[in-house]
Length: 338
Image (cartoon, rainbow, N blue to C red; front, side):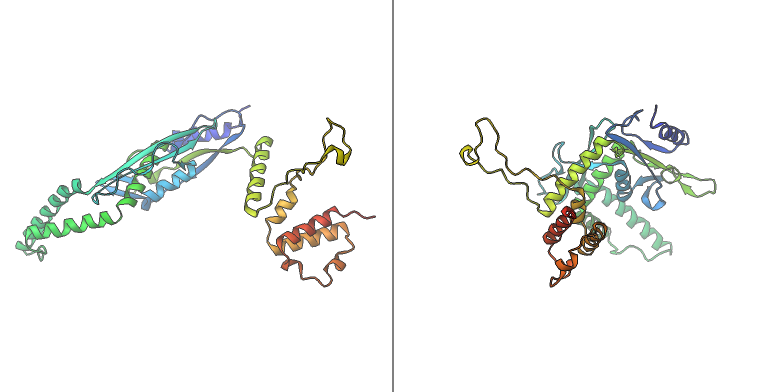
């Protein structure tokens, strides 16, 4: 039996329609520890930038696709962060690494670099503003404008080149990091560097990045599997112990055979580790008002007769300490009518 037959057919139909389909590994016929989760993402025109008729994806949109694909940023696959020593204010080199979980439970690693060299950008910027100065000068001579300011070519070029370089330098680290992340996401999801622009049926500018959908599959724990549920509950219980500071059971004390009259070879009885009660865990994760309501419900359900006596002269339950409310809950749960 193919448990993923419907999803397989949906992805094949999407691919036939020209939509983007990402599948980190082939779909299995039977889901065990992991099962596929499909997320369909629709991007907007604002999620792209136009460069000479082609459209590149912006960082925030790429991160949205990465979240759908379950990309995890990692430092386990080589050095990440700035690769240069940071002493040159005109240069930055950044590396990121990430993984995508496959159906087999393995992590597929990816990495990407991005560097910015302001010294290399300077000649192109100087050429750009020399041409701009020339055309503004021509417009002034033809009576079509006020001309460039500053009027001297070298002053004009120097002012605007330094302005642009300073603007880039202020956010150079962030530009390198976001650029490296965007490259990694494109590589991991098999996306093109840019989307070729064209006119849609209404004559408007468009491209496949907005005209098509992104069908993204990630693999997540299969919660319908009993073994997976046990693992998840054990992890949750361990995290709860760490967060709320519940102490573990003490090591049983050393008891001599003479004290207890135990024959050699027999094992002395000592305190055993208390089994974790799911109801107690849920109770401790509730707020004081909800804990008070839980206690009152159990009092009514069990017809506990001593509640009014226990509360006489005591502060309201909601004002008790967390540990006191938990102990009282355990007391009520353990009560049995005589």
